[in-house]
Image (cartoon, rainbow, N blue to C red; front, side):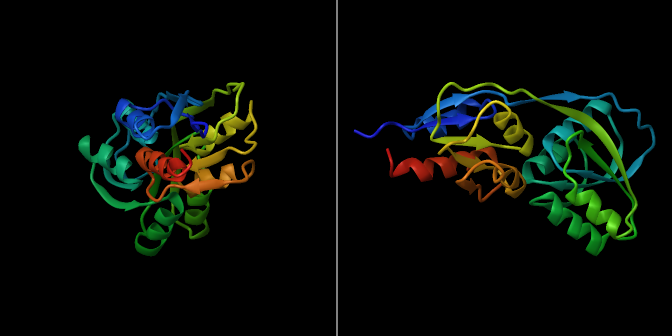
Length: 220
């Protein structure tokens, strides 16, 4: 009899998400590899164009009750959360680099405020500044790594951010574990440590889980 593969999730999952794994016959261990702290923001002026690349940034904007005319965002879940809270989204992209390319092509004469975390990636601000687009950055949340030593190995590990990868490797090694990543940015971080990486076809938690289920389906 084959050993049942066990998956480690680097964030605690909602019940329907857990069931996707458990109903497929996989084992599951979960923990929060990172912790998010929303920051106090002193930003009183009206913002015409905001760049928002994560749901955590949206939570930071809501925490600060900021007035924004137009939003440019990454990911459908980020877009949905913005729209549910009354913000107008004019552009949505699959990742920050693609969003930056859209802005450079269509909105080069506009100015932007980039709401981000303290560990934000460089690709978007670099591309905008290289093209002389006025950009102001405002940190609205802080990501804290929460390393935890795992005293066992896992067949697969689910990662939902580059910071989660950094947190995991601070206390563990990959060995033969397969890294299932929510997008290319997270995968780029995982590539520094893991030998086998599978990237979700859509940047959602559910799709990361689906990739793991598909991979191990024939091995159970």
